[in-house]
Length: 318
Image (cartoon, rainbow, N blue to C red):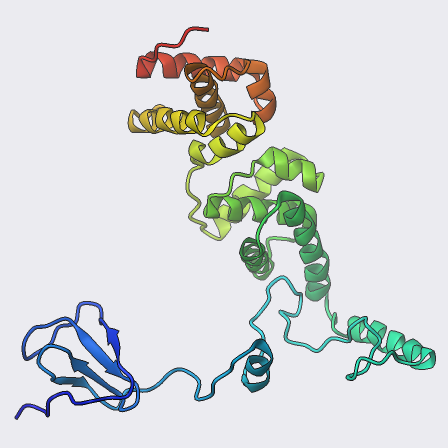
């Protein structure tokens, strides 16, 4: 016996379950009645599902203050905090709940409480290590202009390194730099080892060695660096037009299609593509200017330029 046809409801919204179809008519258009908790076929009216659970809140909020007051959950986990943001903190404002400034005698007491509260929150060597490392991670990420989600991912990866015991016998700064480099590679953010080494003031070789260890021990799936990530940076630094940027990307796409990128540094290939594009569009930049922006030598640009010109049969006159 077929269930009753779909009647009038107070709230209706179209829902399309992935790969689902009506068992009666085969339709794929559904209506979700939040008031009755039913999922109904919009074509024939068959009730597909009933007694559905409403996962949203039962309250409404019209501004941020009401939302914060009525919510029954706290803030999300913050891996950039040594305690993940799960403990209370004594702020630095020295004001009571009404906003009135606290008396000087009470300020001294709050200062002592704040100091001992901070000491008590760091009880073992791992927490002390995280406090130092995450501060350094935030400093390096700020200089590199990395977003909040990238910093959180880097902090999570560093915590995994701590759990695996990969920080023993190694500088905290080198592990932090290697973690940031690995996350930048995974997110496709154009940051080189040289840039990270300059900001962290750690030798490039040390960061590379630590990065290879982390990638091997944690079995990270790090994609190869795409030279196209660097095109926008080079074009902006050289004050070139959008036409030149588009031309450089086209050259790189042709090079990728012919397999000319494998075994070659992405910075050098991207710099050569920008150099060729600037010549083709009439916005000529010298090899020295491009080399200074890309952080490679003029010899590298010349070698990559000859390879691209010959393989892609480009008509470039220098």
